[in-house]
Image (cartoon, rainbow, N blue to C red; front, side, top):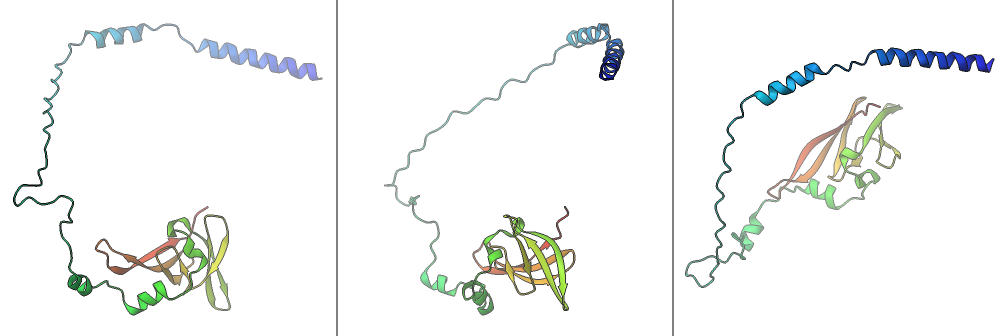
Length: 185
């Protein structure tokens, strides 16, 4: 019985090989004609390489009158200016940043955390979040997550809304909204 199947397979492979061999054409005259046409086209003019200006060295002379020292800060704030500068940090923000225990999900960047679901228990809405190590955490409104003091404001079935406290480019503290959408897997 096995030799019959082996012969049948060999016959099928032979038929397939013959059909495939019949699909190959050895006529390449159209390719040769196209190559001749491309070679016969007149060549274009190549633009010359632009002239490169030589490097001019500059020697700094510290003895010049009125010359600024390049190693000194361009603008230095006085102590009065530093004291008067508003950091934007409110007492509530300072309390959140400095005077509370950190939570486990604050070890990870917000974009590395994944919302995988929600859970409702006696009227309380819980969010289910997976960290980069694969550990699943249950969170609720008021918990923190992410490295930018992300306080959870709302938990919906498709997203978690947060408020983060960050420093802007000027160095002042400010709040910004953030969210994590339900991960599609």
